[in-house]
Image (cartoon, rainbow, N blue to C red; front, side, top):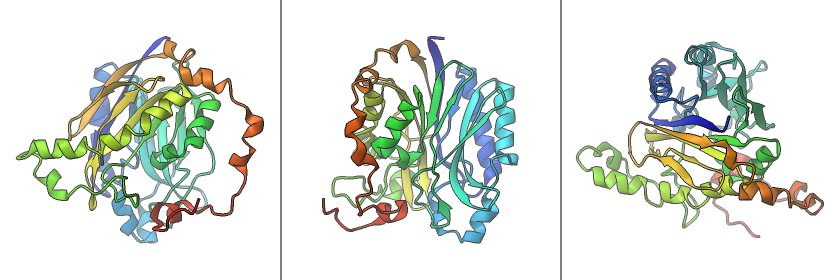
Length: 322
């Protein structure tokens, strides 16, 4: 297979309402498949909503969490089989020991389910970080990988995913409009910009496509695709997420870091594109990786002494000394 049609979705989840969000997933997945998509990528934590979870008690989080083989993922798997398409969704997972994870399940039409646990979870002290990469064979002849939101910001994670053989990276997010500590990072977008989107569409379009939305993404996201010679399927929330706004900007990038398809629409949207898989073998990033000198990279695995856990790193206000 040299061409494969995929879709990325942006929508605004209803907080703590998995039934409503599953309904949205089903509706939009059917839309994408009618458009020819064989793989449909939904945002991070899309079955529950995201940023409000930091306000929940541990007890409430455990009430909302489900096993990867539980009924929520089971419904998505049944839909994947019915539509003969892969469907990726974000959810709050609990394991056999009751440990919580920000997780993402890719349900394939052959019945396989691949679950990635966010490697750098910071949403709540009760939510643990995963400790393994997720790369798998697909029924369509290519290997895919999953990295959730902040996982993609650390270049090592994307490179390792590529070295494990992934040529298509699923990158579900809840981003845009965050309160970055960096002076030139993202900044919050006022909630009225979203609330008044129908009466002032220009304001919301400018905000979502500006430096706290699409402008921020284009500083780094194309590099992840280009430098590793992989397709990147970026899915994101859009609209209100507790006291922040997510900016959507769903897009599909090719192994040269070029945007194949995207939506500038500040609303629910499905973005579909054909992936020309023949681009991968000669992609610049793939050729560069063959020139690596692993014997020089031992420093990457050494503990430097100033490492922080994901929550401390995400919320620290201290400048980095080196």
